[in-house]
Image (cartoon, rainbow, N blue to C red; front, side):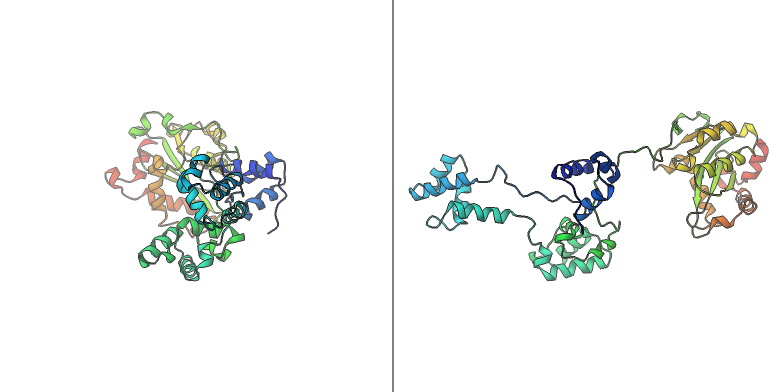
Length: 378
């Protein structure tokens, strides 16, 4: 994969913004570079930034190793050397032991060996252990998650630590293609199908597709909750085979349902269709409309102006706040399955389906029908 042309400073800024939830396009715009450069940079490491090679201040420096070497040559004890350096004696003991002992310790050799041991990336467990790699590949082929694979291996090999691997190590092996022993295609077996890790923080809103001047469902008149006064509606889109859809309107008091054929699902398609349906009922039955936050309602202000019916919006991902409509949509699936191409249903066919629903006796209505109750209020 070709490497993008980002300077080290640009890379630092790109990763810092990526972790805060900025989109690739937004990061590229801020850096003043083409979008594909930033996208390739993130994709090259699977969205996981590898640590740059460097020395931690906690580690022994070359100067300290030279002091250790002089102390050993002078016959000082390890505790005395540690006290002179201000280090724990166990640190000095391990340093000397791993580099040949008292007689063979050399500062330059020890420093070079420490640098080599610290270099990353090292050979992963999956590279060094073919049996473990085969077990992980088998689990991924069965569409198991990395956590399921990790926990299953612990159960199946309780005494064999060579068959242990964390779920994070599996994810990194999939997301970092340059150092991964796993086939890149196995990322498609993950539930998300992603070949790249994204930050956990929520994406910053860009303003695109956001509805403006929305009134919350909490601002509705108190009579809406009581269902004592008819004329308060709930609405939504019912999707068929993509991109086909229809609009549903359900009156809260009577459960009367209106189905609306749509030429498309954009705001300019939905607005005139809904306006025509709402204007088809008497004005005293157009008191309010509650909808979710779909972009099909981008022209809700015009809808209110054309029908005199104010529009209120539910909270994000809160369909129960318009539960009457949700329940009705579930009943509609008997006639309009998800696999159906709803563009084949004209308004006459949808009216026939609505008549069937409105003619059903409902327990919540005392076994009366929505059509009977709506007739009393017209």
